[in-house]
Image (cartoon, rainbow, N blue to C red; front, side):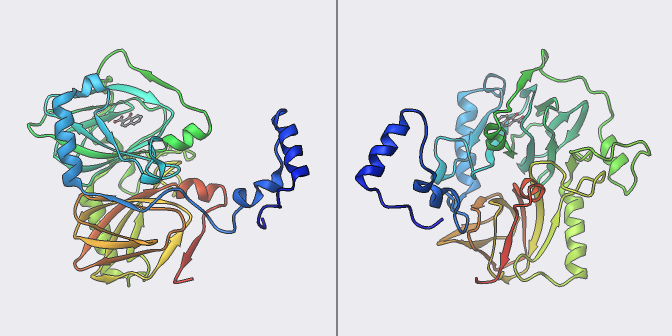
Length: 346
Ligand code: 1HN
């Protein structure tokens, strides 16, 4: 983990010889493999929703949701271009479903989350239940669950898609298939999952090992209610204000196995610096501010999206009451014993 050993002519000749047999010396690369602190190609970056929206509307005139299968513009981290990654381990894209359109039913081993950015009343169906989506709703699509979207309203619907694509790619574990009809059969009334699992009660024979939350739509209004009550009843934590984690009522753990999702309120002022090993994708839903992330300052307002890389110190500064949704790979890092956080300036 010291700096690499010197390259003498004898050593180089040796490296060249063994190279032909697909061998290479660890001591030449060790300091890049095992670093004292995280080093990431992921960069701090922000996107204004207005700019994404304009491009999406243009995409809407170029291709239908059906032809595209999913009409999405991928948000690529500038440090990871060409890899469909918003952070090293996560994917983000913005999807548009126009009035009357359907995004046909399929399933894949990647887990997906939706976070609604604009529009009201379009639906997604997951594993036989339809849910109607509103601004700020967080929707879970578990790995290998059939899902299709439709917009029967008269206005376009935009949402953020967060997926664990790079993780599944890392494991070479991607499978996918299309259903032979656009919309999957709906077998349960809309709202059944929320009613059964979202009221502090669960069916007595429920599977307590379920990796995904059966509450597959966390409505914005209810999440805000929880956050507002928290704000009234507790002092803010200096580095992150008031933060809630969306949870799976069957396990008490994260709503999804590969992505942790957060809902956060910031009071006017600045947070203290904080860094963590999970790179995070943020969406502002109310308020506005700027974040100092590493050496960059990113300004954002409602619907804007921004990224904090692993281990980059983050300070949020807001002039008004602000609400943020975010997601990261913390769920995985915690299971692997990797997640770390450092609060303060160190
Ligand atoms: C997907 O299934 C959706 O269902 C969105 O809306 C984005 C990106 C890559 C792979 C699958 C969706 C996706 C995706």
